[in-house]
Amino acid sequence: QVQLVESGGGLVQAGGSLRLSCAASTRTFNRYYMGWFRQAPGKEREFVAGIAWLGISYYADSVKGRFTISRDNAKNTVYLQMSSLKPEDTAIYYCAAGDSGSSEYTYWGQGTQVTVSS
Image (cartoon, rainbow, N blue to C red; front, side):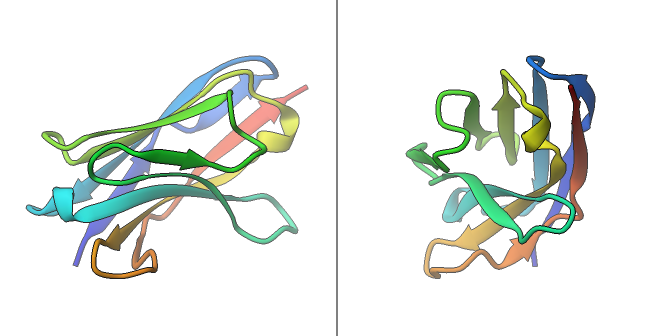
């Protein structure tokens, strides 16, 4: 079992920045690929960004050039740096982890609210 705890959400004006953090409780953090998802009111959950244990990252088109995912394997933590935020980025952001031997994200955090005001 892997427990994920997100932090760093909040209220920010359009054009501003926030950094989300996700701490994982596992001794084998390196074996997991990590991701961020978000769910806006009335919408389905969508992929935002992902990162493999070696640091290869990938992004949804809607956030490319504005968001950066990174991980610190020594601290068992993954980050999402969000810049040039837009009101449409408002959502609950979830951290997720998937075992390197699986094609699915298996573990999920409780989520952190990000609200971008216009």
